[in-house]
Length: 513
Image (spheres, rainbow, N blue to C red):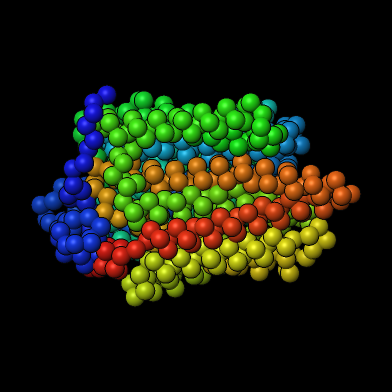
């Protein structure tokens, strides 16, 4: 290792709106619009080709997000079919989110060095093969391994896709539109996964929740081969093996420690994993501050606005990946809904998100991103508070539906500016690493959130059981506690946005064409 920290200014970065070059208070130095002689990676492609590229990238985001939840509704059927324990059932979800999140930084750096289109295509094909393996799994171990392999391949293709979007739409109104579409897909993907999972489980088998990915992969690979334009980051950069090693083991130990905490916070395994994970992540930060070509350049997360966006993204991930699992379990195991009906019951959240996104996309230039980043989590928290009132003998229309409407609307408000803020002022050579950080925030937030929510649910359910509650009442009590915890997390996200997302609109938004 060398003791050099790359502190070069982010010249050539994606421009921020209206801020004069080098003006005081601007997030980063402004860059001129690409000229006719600019490198092809930064010059906007033909209009039609760019929008086709957006369609492929949005489809990719849909696949990686919905695969975080599509198996949720299928889990009761898969558990009966393969004889999964409750712990193994949780790991079917955790394995994907954990591997995905832990390897995203490495995947982003590989995409920068190897070529983003090449990484996208390789990751997509690998994702399809892992989905095929999972769809044919005959044991709990095979299913968990397949989900981990899906996460590994998603860690390569997801940052490549977002980096391609960043260089395809470098500035202007079209960039706002592209990121709003991308954010809407990211926000609705979890609910789409619940609906599609319910439909496939009901009419076919839980296995088709994995096999359906083959169709998505075929479309993305065929169309992407023609419409995506290759781009690379900084040439000659190493892959920072020690940084990757400590990041993967650190996040893995931390998540596993929270999982073990369900059996007791004072056990040697729990304490060892949590302390070991914290030490490894501290070592990761130390390594990144000293290597010449870090896996995560600290300048990416040192930027206040980007850091705030990443933290908000992590909380959103904990809700979409962690809390929605308990929603599906409540609908099926407590309210007795069939998988398809449970999937349909969650559609209202997607519809609510899709209805608010175009409204706030139009309002964004007038009001700026900060009001949406603060108000969105508050509205979503109100939805979670409503859901926390569920009971075993409750009614869907009264106890669940209003909460889902509020949750979807609040998340939709956040998704309009979130992706853009997370990549504001990022230099082209850092696009892959920054894009990976965006996705890693959601996936790691989801895997940690799932572990913590499982702990909350188990504790509250056990407490309810000691008072003579039925199994359904205990499950409802546990899920209600999860939703209450999720509401608290969303309110913390609103405070983070209030503190971190600061500055004039001209500094927080890409310039308009």
